[in-house]
Length: 566
Image (cartoon, rainbow, N blue to C red; front, side, top):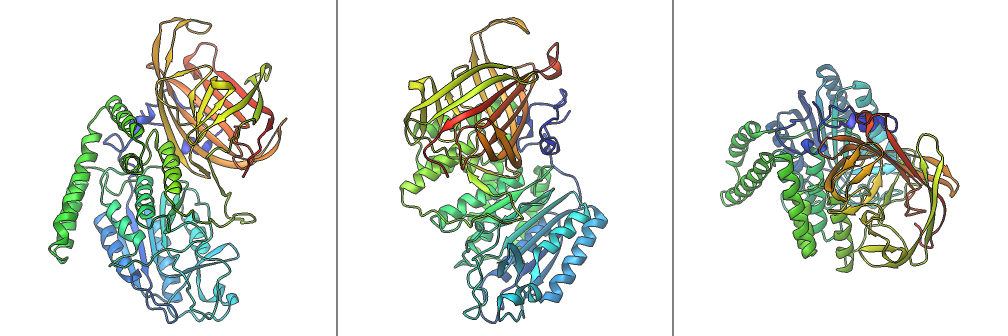
């Protein structure tokens, strides 16, 4: 039996999840899955000795990352202060090895980087750049490597760019835009930047840059999915820089990956790290080692719990957070559950609190006309009192309209929007806290804090059913019903309804409902920059478990009036 896979999520709209699939929560970081099983190959580059703008830490960063990647099982080549010729040859050999072994690839670069015409470039040592036109000839274009990795058809690629330092050419040449350009990760890859597109990253005041310092620490924590590693890095860097640097990543992974997948690997890594730490200052090692061991023990303890215990443990942690939703409480929840059943809601609340505390929001580079990305949009709703939305409930197969309804926003607070004087209440992302049809025991996280291609999240919630006679299943007793769904942004595409034509994100989700494991399929389209309300929402439960087939319902927006838009 298997959980809902990334490949099924990527296939998107029409697929039906096999009824043999188990509960999505079994996909949590635990002994249930060790992730992808393949050999590991790495290439690490660190450039510091620039003539115009030398950097302090890239060589240190590269050495530390290369050493740790070897501990994690990668066969890694490390290049320091590399020329264009060195970089080109090393990348070619790296891609050839990935293709030959069908290995997981790990590419890390620290040094200067620059964008030009939406393309990103690594700046080698010895580059003679007197004007922007020299960049394509004197620097290494990352698109070349990404295209080669796609052709290699190895199962997974991790690409990390700590290459957003400011002023790469001194005063001689000014880049057309700071930092790196946004780029949607190719299929089967994770692409990470040390800071958000169009911004610059700190070189750090210690032995390592701020981003890499945190990456080194989080990679060592066992049983941590790679997405959670980077989510923790992002949160730590943001808090330490007071919002001045916020790492960014794009993912289109089809399989799970853990740097350390079980206790045996952790013990092996522990021994290797102890040997590596032998050369460190004696006073620094015990604290670092003690913290890592405590975190590892917490992960192993959680992994030994049953699925139901894990669900309840997280729910208890979230309820404690809500009892006192301070920055510290939200930070603590997100560090413990970076991909939790309430993590999108927690992130939105944390954003709001940090903004109130004076954190200056980074200006993210516009992606208009950028051919390499579908863009990013905030999931925070922009409702105001008086906004109204008219929608139809349709049978999903016949498209027969079963009813037409209009909802009006009657009050708005920092954390909630109320429709029709309390008939329905949603949180700041649009997730229902009170529903016209369901009595929620815990909140359903169907809407995320942000939308970008490849983003994944999950919801695990319960609602109370009063029971009674149903047309499909006969008499049902009053009971609490469990629902778990994995969701993913699979596309951004044009969609037309009676309300207009929109450039919408398409989200698909698959999961289960009830103790019997009835399959659930969810699809919705939303253009949050124009309309906070979903444009079309489809819910299909039953699958082949229900006599007569599936139960597909469609809700479609036909008219709206929203004053505040993106």
